[in-house]
Length: 177
Image (cartoon, rainbow, N blue to C red; front, side, top):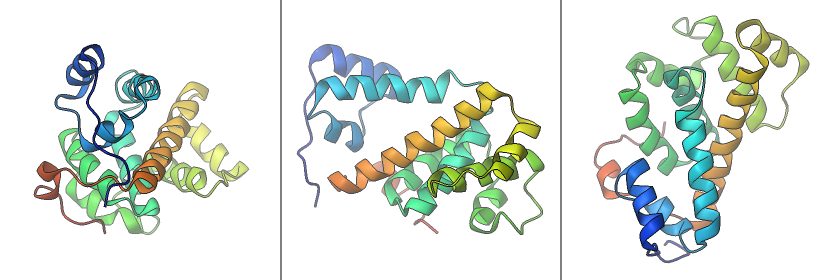
């Protein structure tokens, strides 16, 4: 059961959320219990999603791996739809849990997925960093690290608040692998 009520938004925040995301999802309705932090969260999420240099499909692949590691069904369901929209190949989605042995991921994706696991495990080794730097600039390293860090926070907030899965993704998305 969700631990906080679904909040209503003041008109300005409601408009901003709708402009960015459409109808606010349950996560935003839960966060809305603290309007100032919802505003900050929204703008940070928007910057990661839309002001990034790295390909959206790569970041969505990383977010899906973050959801798997965190066992976040909500994050998985929402980002599965986004990953598909961004063009992530279904075979890569299916092979994500075994990316280290799968031949379908290229070197950049492998470096990004290793970074994902390093950030999630609080252990980005020098080897992981060196491999990431073969493929990405310093700004992109920061961006990819922030992507994983932010979505780790998302999964932790979803868990803390026990946010219920939105009906439109429950029907659309398969269960977390």
